[in-house]
Length: 445
Image (cartoon, rainbow, N blue to C red; front, side, top):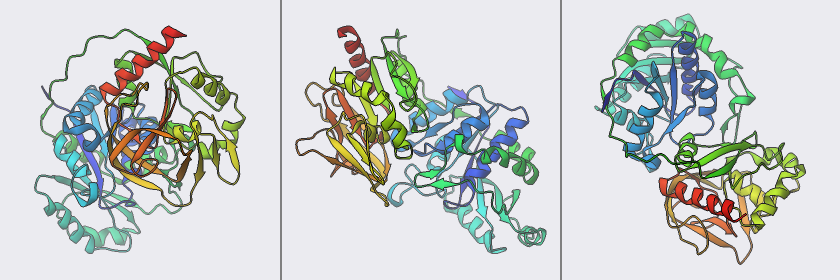
């Protein structure tokens, strides 16, 4: 199948050059024109997509060749943006920065898969003619990448712009003035979440006034036909079980593709807040990542943690990742010890430095009696905490890439509960097993 979807990749020369604010501002400016804009983010980022989703009114999707495979990138892109007027894909880090110094899973890799023109964000602060050397280098580095335009960021004055504009190797599509004091706040995992700041949406006016939006649309419309591999036909599945998904300020890191795959496997998703709600009537629980350490007192005071502990004792299938893993342990120590759900035999200590960062690959080890089986796992880890497990702790995941909880062991398990530091991109096999376990629990309780 071949599709025509106008599309652009907003890439940067390096992290911190302004591509996130410019990409989100462009999404806002295009949405204000009445266009249906579908947002995407390359890599395993959870935070930038929250800003995209609010700005565009459509759920932003991650595009990551390492976790999804190239075919997965194509299918997710086509299925999500098929009814959109334009797709805007925000890159990660620098354009050519991939895994371990390679091109794999880089923004350029995604641009090649999608045959998408690239608009490069160049930070012009404290330089003038030298920026063209940077542009020339990026333009010639990979002949398979088409850099169709440049947006120069942090332009100090009109004179500064004139100095740069005396030469042009790639069309300049935008000149963003230096916005002192308008930066979005950040914390250790990246920018603050979208519900904590509306700065991204307000940047739409700056992009509208500083960029040639019509020329940017022309670039997007110049993208060629894209061949999409046929999707595997899957039979319609009746709803078999209800999975409660924790979603609030403490637990907010989810790949939409994971939720969609659970639904396709027969799950009905019921969202709830472990901080504010009582535990709903569900057959299994999925507690994603986020910032439980910022809300530890509310989580400790909530009755929900006691209900989760009781359901775990009854054998309910429960899956927690990163923040969810932390919550399922006995306690989290920050300035003091906060009691958590006390399901997994471990305690958590927050640290001031990164404990693990990078892609993860491995396999569930088929622990007898646990629902996860031996499915392959690919994902990402990024955390500022340590889990201290009991001496007799059991693990359900063995990693060939990544740290996990300790020395490549991940997936701390107790009864029918599994908690991992890995933010996994779910396989169909994993989803079918999880839903089947939920159905089995429903049948027996």
